[in-house]
Length: 117
Image (cartoon, rainbow, N blue to C red; front, side):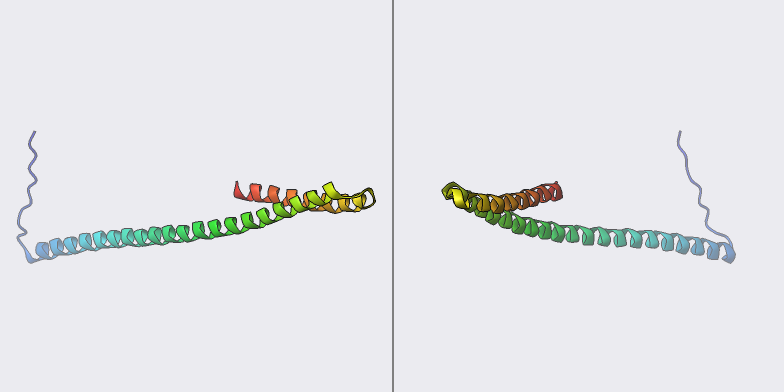
């Protein structure tokens, strides 16, 4: 089945004006839609760029927190060594200090794991 669209030449000035107005309206609508797509594209690009910045910021913050946890872990080792070398007289005091320190460190590790998950 062959369908041919018949588009006769307008015969009056009024028809010519109407056809011109229709074409202008059509082009205006197409231009508006193209502008909207370009605006969306710009917004998407901006969000992608922002996402990269956020990713870098998150990575930097994570590295900072990991460094703090490594330092705290090393301090925990020092606490353990002090406990291992403690005399009976200093044991109770050092044990109490290390318990507080280890609880704080455990809490920090837990918060880090929860936040990073």
